[in-house]
Amino acid sequence: MCLGLPCEIVEILDPDHGLARVQDDGRQRDVSLALLREESLEAGDWVLVHLGFAMAKIDATQAAETRRFLNELGLEV
Image (spheres, rainbow, N blue to C red):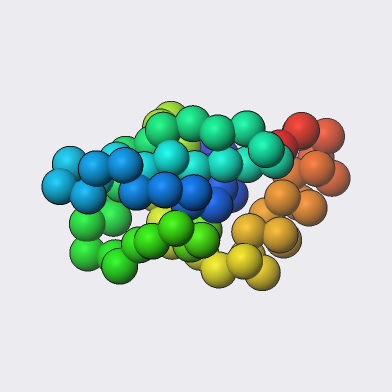
């Protein structure tokens, strides 16, 4: 089973190479946006991150619902 963690884009670090800094619950990490090249992404947008790659753009409501679901499963996100 693969889980994508909802993360908010804090900063686009390198738009040419698709690199961004995201945060989830105050923790920040750098991720690749290479799989979402067709999306218009900017700081404040939400993405699902798996293994260092943003897999899908989501809205804030979806992010909150996903976080709630993962917490109900006992996973800290």
